[in-house]
Image (cartoon, rainbow, N blue to C red; front, side, top):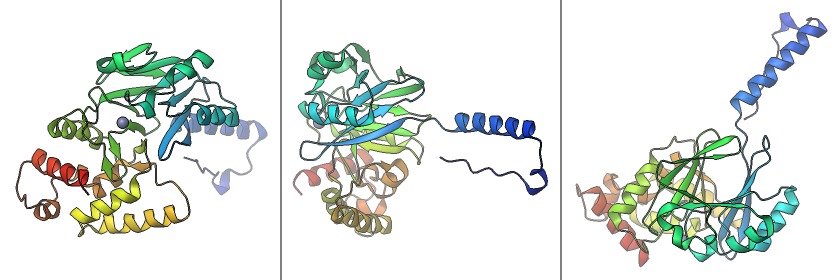
Length: 289
Ligand SMILES: [Zn+2]
């Protein structure tokens, strides 16, 4: 967010000293309103996204998961950042496979789920649902979002309005239920849906175009979804990422956050059904789409 403040015309002829104090006030204001957490997106493997997050105030840098070592190191070199943390979302190899090599190289601290600690290589700090973790000058709120795996967690930075959710929530999708039940996943997704609409959703895969085709198949009447689908096609045609999205956009268009939609329920022949049941049927259909 850039602050555009200009002096009113009558105040233009201020003394040098007053101007300086104005600039000081402006700088303070800028620092207070802008919680800078720089994010650098790293395409990895065939369709993964890794992320470097960097707090310029304290100099700490984390990689959200470790899908691959070389692209993470290349991104660090490009930015001139030193890796201090690994924040893992879950144990799958395309998320934690580079943990030990990066830890050996950088001597960084590995943060991961207390409930999945045995499967997070090199874990140092164990966190769980509603814990806060201090990352440099920023506080991350941890959510347990089990479903895709048991012990999957997400990191939410309220001051920077950013959510790193691994394979729990995708742009227009959600993670496949390898370990958890539909009820568990629905509970998890509701925690994320409760975040402010402006929250940036930084998920771990570029699955959006395929997800859009599925979403349109179960809720074709959704105008926001139709428009988003066209925008996605345009971005992909130009080789651009569709991630991050936002919580507000996901709530308006992602069928996995919309079991309360009357159109979706009707299209699934589940009018008035329990929301878990609608969610479960949506997930089941996606599995064989
Ligand atoms: Zn996964």
